[in-house]
Image (cartoon, rainbow, N blue to C red; front, side, top):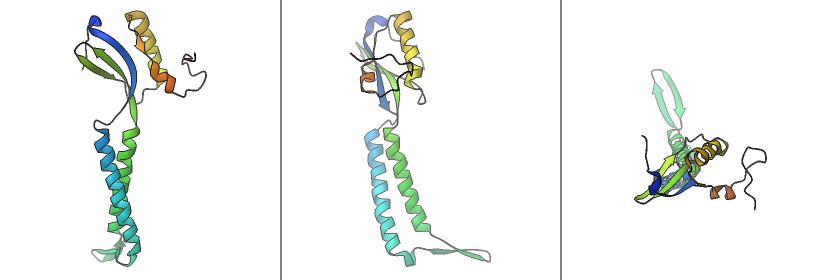
Length: 151
């Protein structure tokens, strides 16, 4: 999808970092609930370890499968995956216009060193002044191709 915003309608363009999650609070809450519930029941399952193995019989072969602990570990793993997903993010260009705010998303794998040449080109060729104040809060290695923002 291509977004076209007339240059005269733009108030500000700012580089931002945003969560990949569409609803980060709900995702974090669901992950936290899964982790907490799974952990509590895992502790209870290990305390009652005698009844934790169910016998599964396939033809003449009999073996024990710990179904309840496996399900609980799966629950905790999914919860961790959800919580970690909230903290993963991607860079965006936040465009403040007369009619509201719009976001242009960079790829999730885009690094700041990949984005800066694009921003420099937009400044030079198109005349957009992009606010890079987010870089004041970033810890970046020296010599990574990022201009120094020290004052």
